[in-house]
Each structure stands twice: as C-alpha cells, then as structure tokens.
Image 1: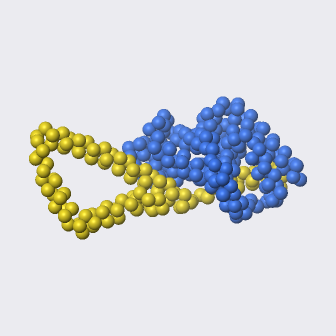
Image 2: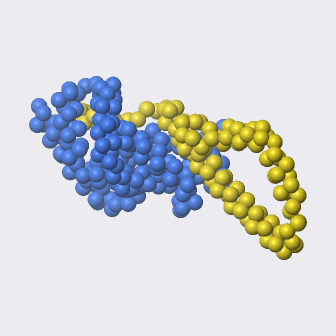
Image 3: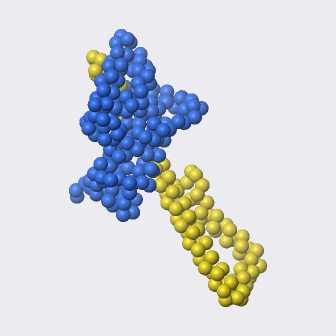
Length: 177
Length: 105
C-alpha cells in the first residue's frame, strides 16, 4: 500500500478525517520537537510549544495555501509560537531540574561535559533567529530554501545566520580546549 | 574528534525520540477536549434556537400549548430519586470528558 503524501493527508484532514491529521502529526512531530528543542533550549518548553503548534495547525488547516508545503507551514507556525511565547520565568525555573536530568540521560557520547557546557552556553548566546537556522539546516538537514520558506526570511539571511552561528559555536569549542 | 564532529554530536543530542506515545496521547487528549467543547457549543446554540422558537410559538398560540411540558417536568421532579439519578448519570457522562487528566472522548 502506497504511503499517503502530506498533500493527500491534508486534503483528507480538511474533509474531517482526524485519523489523517494524526498521521501527519506522527510523521512530523519528531522533527518539529527536535527543531523546537534547538530553538527553545528547554525540552519541556519545546514540547509544550510543539503541542500548541500541532493543535493550531489542526484548527487552521484551511488556511494552508499549498497542501504540499505542510511541513514548512507547520514549522513556521512552531517558530512563530516559540518566538511569541514569553512564558513566566518561574515556570521555566521549576523545570530546570527536569532539563538537567534529561541532559544527564541524553548526554551525547564523544564530547566532554566541558565542551557540552561551552556549546550550550554558545547556543544560548545566539539570537533566536540564528538558533532556528542552525537547528533547521545544520541539525535538521533542511535546504536554505526550505528554511527560508518556513521561517519567512530571505535565503541570504538564512545563510548569514548559519555562518555566524556556526562560527560562534566552533569558537566556543576552541575556548574550551 | 575534531570541532565539526563535536558540534554535530551536540546538535544531534537535541533530537527528540522517534516514537513518544505520551506526547501523542497528550495531543489526542487535547484534540478530543476541543472537539467536545465544539460539540457542546454547537449543541447549546441549537438548544437556545429551539427554545426561542418554542417560546415564540407559545407566546403566539397562548400559554397552554406547551403546558404538557410543565406537567411532565413537575411530575418528574416530584420523584426525588429520579432527579438525583438524572444528575448522577449526566455528571458521569460528561465530567470525565471535561475534567483534565482523562483520556479520549
């Protein structure tokens, strides 16, 4: 049985099929959450934004002009929500321990704790735009054009953000050595 | 491991799990609650519209057209156990769907 394309699933979801939307959500939730984790730097917060993003996409599916561009539209929605989401500092602080615990569990092999901390600090110091571009293109493997469409930025700006962000991240590693 | 590799490993550590039933269950739950509230809202609108029409008909035709409803309601409420049972059944049907922490409709 052929796998339905995003456009086919969007069309079915627009006709009222929740199953079709669920398939879309399953297909893209991992990448969306990974992207938002890169932007938010807090897995719990990122997952909250991912939930809000999927709900908003479900409610506003009729506003999607090109059903084939569902992925870009979804990530763009997530990006806008993450940018506009100014959660209370207290809430984030209460989850600080969860974040630390998660990092302990998922500590990447091959880099020292010192390097990881330096990279984390460097990521935090990047602008949200730079983090979004780094997360989509360097971590997620998106093309510059796709990222430009999702983030609603010119391709040149995307390239510039990636270049500057990458330089700063590598510089952080240099300082830690 | 050179710097590029370290950066790659670090960026890969942001990867979310491929399958996360808890995340999807939470999403399903939120969608179910939204659907339920939408149904309740549309039902309420319909009920108000029907009530308004009935009220208008009653006013137009005189006060005795729907007097049998009054008699029926009075008859039902005169049995205390029946009213209580109705409240319990309605609460059992709808509260689990509305209160947070419960799964799908």
